[in-house]
Image (cartoon, rainbow, N blue to C red; front, side):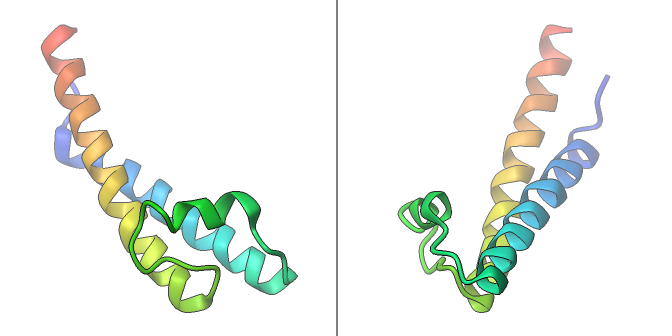
Length: 79
C-alpha cells in the first residue's frame, strides 16, 4: 500500500525540480528551449527566464503532486 501524500510529494518534487533545472539550464546556455517553450501553452506565465523557472517549479510541483497522489490512489485500489 502506497501512502498517497508521501508519493504525491515525491513526484511533485521530482517534476518541479526537473522543470526548474531544465529552464535554468536553457537560460544559462542561451538556448531557445524549443520543447520547453511549448509548456508555456499549458502553464500560465511560464517562460524561459529565471522568474519562469520559479513558476515552473511551482506548476511542476502541483501537477506532479496531483499525478502522484492519483497514481497511489489507483494503485491502492487495484493492488
